[in-house]
Length: 239
Image (spheres, one colour):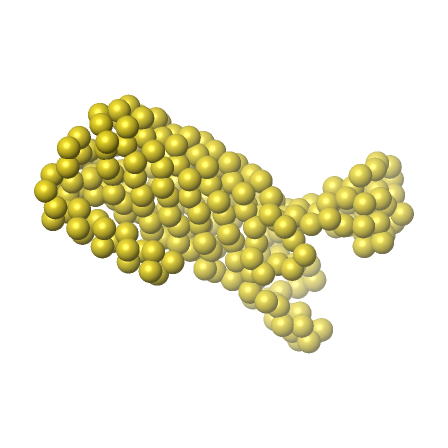
């Protein structure tokens, strides 16, 4: 990631000193709204696979004067992250059937990126950007969903469903604060419609310290670091 960030910054610096490009973006401020989906995973959480979620947000972008398409942007977005795993009746007890257990995590995030626009024409353009993000967990559950219904199944689900950010030394739980680095690439049509692909690579260990300490003190288990990893696809509109 450090090499990727260095490469993008070097590209932006080169663009700033180069000759003006044909159809280059206009200097100044613009605004974007976007909506899309995520495919996320919690790296280091053994036995859990990725899951699909949603994302939506708003950002402000500023094309630097005489920088030939170099820009900075910042935004606020809601993003759904998490992971899931299959469970068996033996694992959940209470005579329950098989099912799935999911971490559904909801974050408010602030990404701050530097990037570069290149327009092939007045209608078609491409861009790439990279930078850090900062997130706060606003809600989430470790939720058990069983394949059957009935009192036994309800009891098993209730026993294994709880708030993922709630402080506890008995159940796995996460801290609310997250941070990492991300990048986006994409295309723009008619200077308004934007399709973007991107990835965020979390750098913060998500386990709450008191839970990790309790596992070490009470059971002699040293938990591995777990970190968010998220892929994005979004559609946006520039105002």
